[in-house]
Length: 125
Image (tube, rainbow, N blue to C red; front, side, top):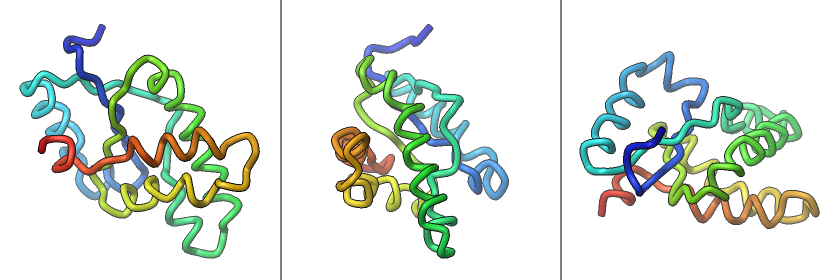
């Protein structure tokens, strides 16, 4: 059960758990102390940036769609933001709306996800 009325999603990502494994846990602890619960979406994975920028755009977009599907129930349940502690992931998730604007099934959801994607500093302002 979530402890607080304010709720956010946090992308675990693929690089962050390996390169800086304590960052996401520390972020969750800080948010908890500030009265913000971190919601989990276990099906979410890599943001897709690495694939997309290494000329595997369709694979990167497939990862974006997977994350949108994984996050959508939490968004509908009131998540106010989607945090990424890795700046490259944050920049890429903010572009989901632009990258999927011509995808009839995902354009609207991708736009909403992009609007919810924020850096931790932005959330705390």
